[in-house]
Length: 454
Ligand code: MG
Image 1 (cartoon, rainbow, N blue to C red):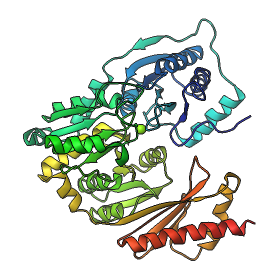
Image 2 (cartoon, rainbow, N blue to C red):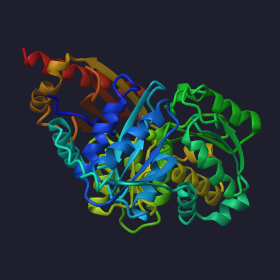
Image 3 (cartoon, rainbow, N blue to C red):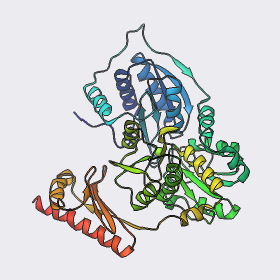
Image 4 (cartoon, protein in one colour):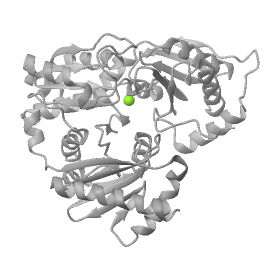
């Protein structure tokens, strides 16, 4: 009998191979058993098999006596936004986020719209593997109702958190790449409502993802970068498959690194508050530290993972959160990664600061980062940590997730991959040479820790 069901962001697998209707049924019976309350909101992205999985999820929930609010095709953050508004006890999103087209998955949210905590995941895993489902009496089976104004309400709320008049005056031209998925249902409309001229790419919903792979990383965004230059847009933006992330392209066609757009947001948003706190995983670098300190903010480090960032933000009432992959959390709106909210804030920043996106990037300190990986057999992966902690005990370090060593002129983070038989080293410094050296030192330490196990 297994013990683990949930990964970094919910359950994922290849459609009809791992991510089957049977699995979806059992997960939703688990959710229906564990969550208190009456109604669960269910939404999905446009991936293949979504209809099949949604029916299975709905069926499972109804069988445990829960009723379902069917919100249809929505971005994940739109579902998350609407859960507390509808007074639901939780939500299920059928999506594999940025994974390749053959994947689908399930994200489970609590009554506040945030993905459930690691502790609640553990509880659900126990119910799932013991099949301890609480199946309702035949007189108590739940019912379904449709709710079709989720996106409208979600966009309305986003607009209350930006300076709409100033954005409208600027009349920005924006190219939006919706990844052939649910981002296309929200962000182009939002931008038009903000007075932007909008050019859409990959805007038709298609689970084959004919335009590009759903992950908004530079190798997938060449078409967007070219389109921005070709039409003379002020900026471009690309979502992932469920539109909780946004990657930006400046007016010259340069694709921003996630930590650059995060840093631009952080320096603007944190300035709005007195002594704010920024929550971010240990994988974030000096750039984020620099802008946070400049804004008088304290950094609160977490393990790598958006769910952990959300929960920590709520726990300490933080003003902002973010990840180096470009995920931005703005809890004045909601404490989750939110692609459309991020786009609206970026439009505000460009308009209010009256700068181009490339100028905003040029204002940031420059660092060089290096990522390398070290092959480690799966059965040794978790054993490396103890000797690595011993090897580094005299150094300045953060040990929340792997080991991050801090130097005057840079840092290196060593941590195991959640999915592959490797350890990763992220290093960063002002000089490229030093960043390479730090990454190599990290690799040597991992190998030394491995040798000490033999
Ligand atoms: Mg996503």
